[in-house]
Every structure is written in C-alpha cells, then in structure tokens.
Length: 253
Image 1: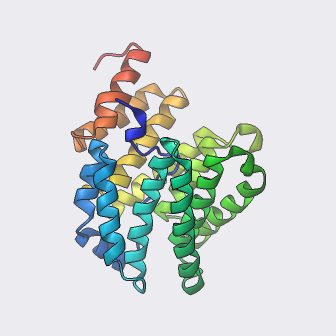
Image 2: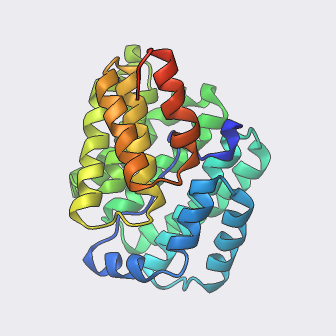
C-alpha cells in the first residue's frame, strides 16, 4: 500500500469548535463520508466532498468556514505527501486568504490562530529552507492559540507536530510532542468528537507513531490496538503501521 494514499500527521488538522460549533460538526452532512474516504485512502472522494462543501459553506458563518478549511487542510496535506507541490501551494494560498479574513473578525479565536500557524508549516513542508524565517512565525500563532485556550484541540495537535518535527537542536522534543497529542486526544474524547471523526483517529495514529519513535513500544502497540478496536476499517493502521511495527520489534499479536 502506498503511503501517499493517506494524509500524514505532519500537516493534518481538524477544527476545534466551541460548544455551539460542536453541534454543527455532529450534524454536518460531510463528516461521515469524509471519514469513510479518509479511512479507505480515497482522496478522489475527499476532493469531491470538499468541493461540495466549498459551494455550500456560508462565508459569514464561522463554523462552516472552519469545516471547509479543515477539508482544504487535509487535502493539502495529502498533496504535500504525494509531492504535488504546485497544487498544494494553490490550496495554501486559498486557505490562508480565508483564514486572514476570518482572523480580522475573530482575532482571538484559538482554532483560527492554530490554523494560521499550521498553514505556515505547510509552506515549510514544501521547502525546508523557509523554516529559517517562517518557523518562528508558525510557532507564534500556535502558541497564541494555546494561550487563548490551553485545551484547544487544533493548537495542541499543531504544537505536537512542531515539537515532533523540529530538530532537537532547535527545540524539538518528541517526548514533549507526545504530551500535546495526548491532550488533543483527551479533548476530543471529553467533547465527544470521536465518532467517525477522521482527525481523532489521525491524532491517535500520530500518538502511536510518536510512542514508537521514542522507543515506547508497548504504548505504541496499545495505541494502535485501540485504533483497530474502535475503527476496524482504518487501512493505514490495520494493514500497514501496526503489522509493520510488530515485525520490526518481533512482537506477537
């Protein structure tokens, strides 16, 4: 199975909504089909759903724009993983335009600030050389999101990503990344944003990978087994990450 079918955790984010927005998420007509597309690695289906959402999302309703941004974000992540950089840059520009307009209206929205930092990280993902002058800007927005709301899911995921991928010489720390991923997972569960939620399962996957990267193999095994138990049709973990980990470490099921 080819890795590019899946959206890597490096850039994968889902919007964290306030209580009123959580209701909107649970009622979204795109949530379940987006999850199914993600779990089976069908990004062509994701693309069609994303553009249907684009046509229908009200530009004056924050939660609808956040949902749309999250789908752009997932698709852009896949494009970068597939090395389709030109198209990825188009979606980065489109998304940043929306985010900047929303930030003008809601400058203290934690999720918007986390997205702003995350999209800067997208640009770094395309060209690592840009980390020299864009890295601090990305972290600034992510840290602002967590200052506004320490439990913000998006902010915790992005902080985890930044700590995971940043070299240790520049402040990266994979063990600290685990703590942020755990906070995000707990917030998903506390807010009941779990059922058929592609970002929840993706964050659990990121946590499992981080555990393995820090030689916490039993924790990684338990994390992957939780995913398989709750989301039995998630191909990336069930058919690739989990069995590969078992082979690497000579573990039995």
